[in-house]
Length: 337
Image (cartoon, rainbow, N blue to C red; front, side):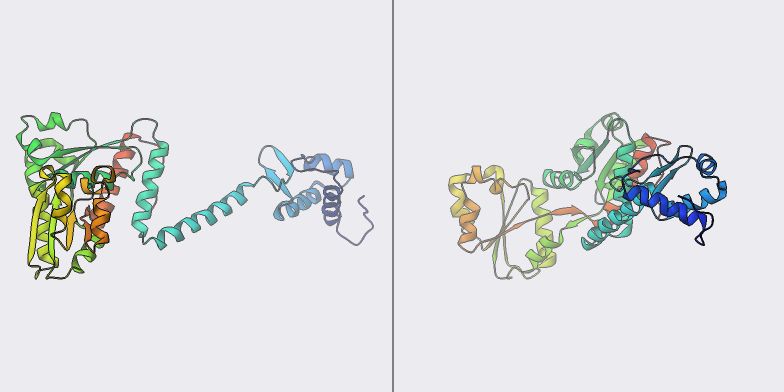
């Protein structure tokens, strides 16, 4: 009960009374409190006193004031708007710590968040991307590398397919973006006419693991290259010469000419082999553990990962974000940089 003769301020007495009612179970989580006017009239005190008591209770998280609805006893099992924001910041901080531990830069994180947000805001269709290069192995690697992008559909084209087509604009008309390497950018750009405005040039290079594994080879080692096309074999040969210029013995074999029965003897000729990441030699069901046997005898196997480099990926992600925003205008904004 409110005692106006007590030395304790009336609003403090009201705070204590509400706290006691909660403690005794007379007020339960999510119960609605009387309005300031109603409680003031009932207790015979000023509305300002009730307002001051409610404010102290709200500041201490005891009650929640919902604009236009009223004041409610806080349910600790249900987070308030402010608590949700605090929890969200903690979650984001934890996520950022993890991404930084994975060596993602701030621009990369922003790009990935923009792409994810754009995906959630979009109501239809994803992103259609055409990838153009001179060999099947690289095209497969690029397709796999880009699969982390939500709702992306990737089609692969050999350069000669585009250059020999009488109407490449029609062939590429359904795509949101077209990717090609720096090597082929000029000739592709010249041939696709107005589609050049969606053509993205990307730089490619062996992955760090590939470079490290090549660099660790003994220059006296005999090395076999196993792949599907002559052009990919030439890329591997060039990179071997660049990172291991003193390497003496390199031979190339094409997978479509191999027979599984003869492969064991063929592999045995080499101290190390360099293969494309989708090599048939990696298929256990086809080769019956051939590589495992080769490795057990001391042979080294180096998958040649030829990837879009990090700078190009960041630029590509920015272009993807822009395309998604154009496809779904008016739905949110980019995160600031």
